[in-house]
Length: 424
Ligand SMILES: *Cc1c(COP(=O)(O)O)cnc(C)c1O
Image (cartoon, rainbow, N blue to C red; front, side):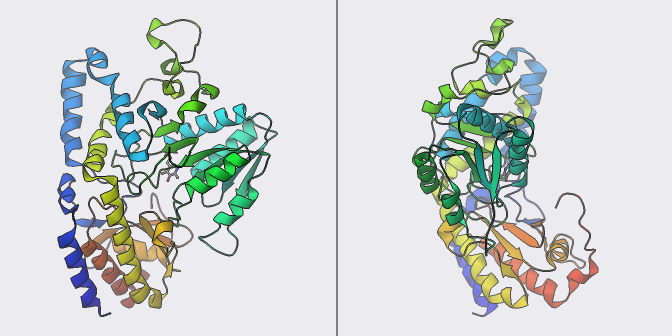
């Protein structure tokens, strides 16, 4: 198809886009932002809300704001996150970061599953998650073995290997629902069934899934989950994360950090720790109120837009991008490193190229006055294009592919250093 036909299709899809107005809920930038899967854009409401929390709640209210506003905040956020992930409010704790939440849940699960000695994950899992599991085995669960399933023969598809590696001795299966590099989307329900049949518990990391694709923790029979709020959910840099434990498992699991906000009655100031029975048992210390408050506008936008609408647009956007990329980028040496089957992918597309890093630099800092595009880069050579249905348009996707063609055609990327620096 001639490239101008893609431009016309993009224009038409933008006009028909039922979510088009949600773009106005976010600050505008002079670049095309394709990194919503790393750090979501700032909702305009968050700016005013932060001012209110600072001036009215902290400034005017000082400590009285704990009772007036802050004690209820994590629970109100849990209620909203629960709606996005198909869980109940009393199964979600909001706070700490994803790594800490994974540590707490994995520690608790391994302690509960005393007689089983294997933890199963895979090399597509987020490295930070692998580090947490490695640390548990190296420092505490020294008789346990961490098995990192490898991709055999393919960068993307290998779910079958994992099914085969779940055994009687598997205590815990810990995977990402959507792989951070390839966007491969796992069959959570099928893996949970298989794990349960072998007596294993599961922890799913939802960081690259929540806010972009529908998740139903009840329907998929998920035992535990963690996820972050600063990617598709637009909670802000380092925003607090969340965790989930299904109701009937909660009494069996103990937080390895017995801290005062997980106490049954923290404000009785008893000298002895007595764990809360609710999901609150997974709390540690005082909630990060300022950054918790910043999560709410993003959640409200998602609930107003509807996760099904968001997912429909995500699928249509990634399909449009893949179609253009196949026709116009593959001939320039790009490799499509995300699943072709729309049902098997999340909301970002990875494009491999031997000059991936320098190409991503040219997108971010064009040498001539050209449209600036912000993707991210993951070694060894993947440019990730995060498609955030709430604020990205089809025309932006069109412009991105057009710009990539130009960068390769003109060899503009050759002007950039290939040494990787700072946050990519
Ligand atoms: C982004 C991300 C995290 C982030 O962990 P933090 O501890 O909150 O920094 C964890 N896991 C996955 C899969 C991620 O994509």
